[in-house]
Length: 105
Image (cartoon, rainbow, N blue to C red):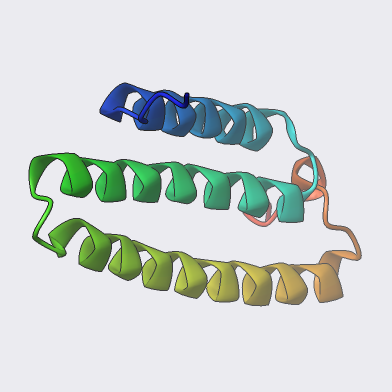
């Protein structure tokens, strides 16, 4: 017999996803990998929003609506990030974070 999923299960999953995203953002050298790690952190926040909404207000859709808003913001962040990355790549010919010296004169 399967045990029902509790809020603690969702929080554990979201916490692990967030930690994996933080680890990836801090250890990646490639900007695309860093952007993907930031997306993992956004997805962990979305899991928290949906889980809290399901367990605290089962009839409401506030958590799902907020998660949809966060996904929209995350998609816009990826579009802007990739556009900036493409512009930097055209000038610097690299996508590694440590090779960027944009503030140097």
